[in-house]
Length: 72
Image 1: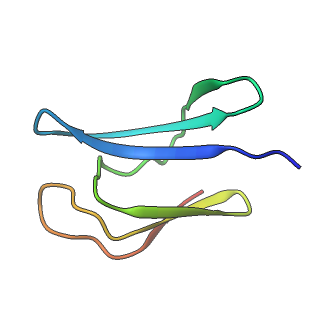
Image 2 (image 1 turned 90 degrees about the vertical axis):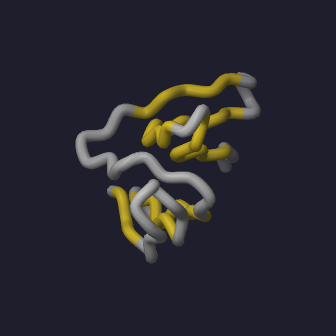
């Protein structure tokens, strides 16, 4: 079984980012994943992987809060 950490979105210097990164403890490396349907930048959210999709809960993107949305 492969274990990894997924990081999506961050708020840095008043700018929201929508980059997706995966960390592999086996190689001790972060890898950026490029996707065609990446949502706007977001921060302060939770997320989980379900199959081949990432489900994001809540968060703030500079224009109010979000509810859940899915990125596949």
